[in-house]
Amino acid sequence: MSFISRYEYSLDTKGRLNIPAKFREVLLRDYDYNLVVTTALDGYLDCFPRLRWTQLENELKALPSSRIEVKRFKRFYLSGAVECSLDKQGRVLLPPTLRNWAGLDQECNNVVIVGNMDKMEFWSQDRWQIEESETIKSSADISAVLGELGVMV
Image (tube, rainbow, N blue to C red; front, side, top):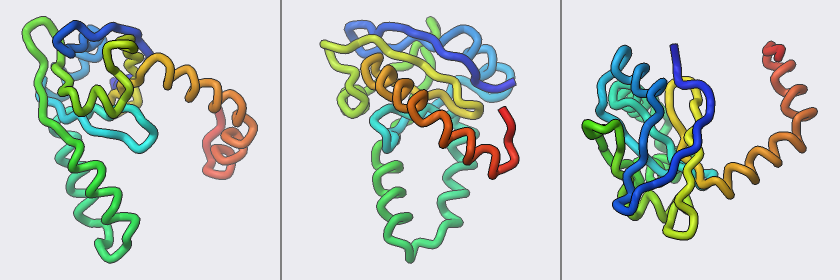
């Protein structure tokens, strides 16, 4: 089982986010409660189980460091990373720098938690609505690319 589905939660006043029970089940069964949360290029937060993050680090190490795009991505992605763990209530504390990056400030504390197979994504509700709208608008292009890749949905 992987992280699938979408949930909406609110940050508490201390910046803690409840992780859905279904996602906690995946963490407990396949990983542990240690997580890495980082800034994603599209203005949301990626949240990986620590074990999966270690695998990703190895994948990034194998990329050619002579490519400026690789250097820039690694600098950006790794510099935003913060190790976290779930508390006894199943919450993760998101530091202010990460909350600010993702637009999860006092005016927008509604968080859309999206399961994306081996990771979770934390989106502000406003940014998620824009992303969802853009995805729907480009559905024909998406279907064509998936078809080229041999994926039929």
